[in-house]
Image (cartoon, rainbow, N blue to C red; front, side):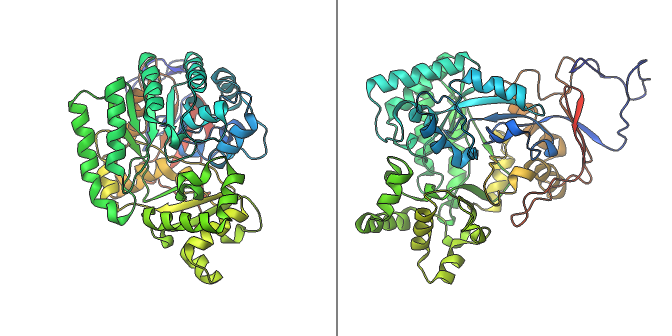
Length: 481
């Protein structure tokens, strides 16, 4: 029974409905708490009430992940937008939230279908203070960034996220990261991290984060854990051992993963990070300089764990290259008579870095081990693109419940539901969410366990799922199929 947006009581199945109550017939269906996506990049698009998440049953999201957030902008709003828009898909909108209070206020008023919490993106924080410059911050800049972080925490930010494969955050020295972790620990905020590597240096990257967590005492969340590239797949078992051992030692660490073999990001992530120092214009200048381009190619050939046939163009900044979307780089390069690496660099120059990709990264065996591990929360990591998004944006939660739980039997249906409700609510301390119990918010999903499934595919991702009958926020119906 729901009253004033919260669950007032749980009645026996044979109990008569109290007088004046509206009754929803749900025979044969399952009722779950609203699904919670604690790793998304919907920071801007959810303000426009895009239905991709509501259609899946998502009623709460944590944005600001991987070092990208929509605040604080400081006096460098154009630079912050240039840094963040590739992931946040902010388009031409001239957003410039100065602080967490301003963003969260707008999110609360404009995203009526979804409760929004946000992390503070470390890359955004650095850009707001020092622009696109890489390297150590000055003492004054570090103090300023920590002051902005403290202010964000005081105004309601859930925690901080680092994106250590994205410039300029990737150039932060250890002491800077340690100070961020220490402040987060003092203010009891979570630290999430897109680590420096998920491929060749996976184990060293995990150890770096565990060392920071141990020294600072922060709560650590490893974002979208996976093992990228066939040559690295055997490292995942050891990676999970490191996390399990850390828990035994008293380090508060967990991780999240999405239920897909492929990931999605921006193509610039394939470049050596020094290439990105100074922003897009500086990157293009380096890619058009013969000597520097040759060096970039050499480093890419050594470092890139995927094959070019594993990497598909998902979106481009200009309409001219839209026909490339959905095709892998190896095939595109062959058609153009070019080396795949040269083709990729030419495309980045032509699009001034505005290219997004889908990349097939991991094995099914490893994916199963991640999703069934007790430390795992399931997330979408979904982000919008000007092109063809990864199907996780439209299908993560139905895919988990239908394909992974019901059809493959990797998890029980109850365990799968917990991974997207109670567990993320507990981990990110989202009060009043994640359970069907008196006093909890009446954010609910009514679905059919026998038919729930994702319709989203890599070739046709923008499809609503099936099997979800109704979605409620605060007891009010907001979505249905």
